[in-house]
Length: 206
Image 1 (cartoon, rainbow, N blue to C red):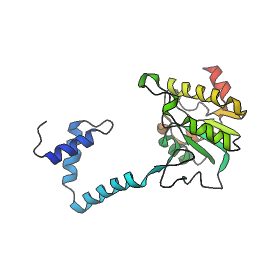
Image 2: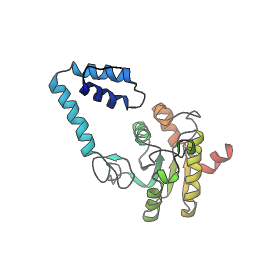
Image 3: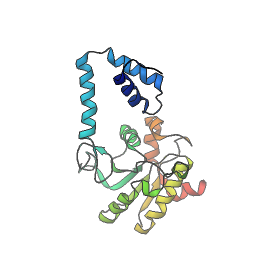
């Protein structure tokens, strides 16, 4: 694809680096933006720049935050004795939208996937173990995808958490097998949190 400008070429390359975006789609994005008011384009650019400078990760739960402690971890009204372990921020948002859960979270930043070269050391698992050593946690809820990789991660975490002698539960399987949490409707997801079951029983059924 020969483009008339080096700047357009660079912009296309950047957009094409986004998930699911090819060069043709990237070019459409660039041409659309060029049609916008220059002030709107600068506003968009400034927002992206602020993302790079202003976003960090919560030192406690590893969720995206604008501060060292996210709003959930810093909220004294939340149940800090319960931690819901999720794959990424999208799952945290999905569960929060159900308005059925008042505990805290821990964001792994992915799930174990040997095929993709992702092992336990690549996830925020050690941070979770440090939380367990320093806090009075009574229950861990494993809210991971009902996929082979999600089940592998849940099993690994269950073994790591055994020495702490706490309750380890998993969300009820109202969530279809093989589905991602972020695509599950809020009612089903909310009920799966409320009707969570001991992890051992879910592992046996599998």
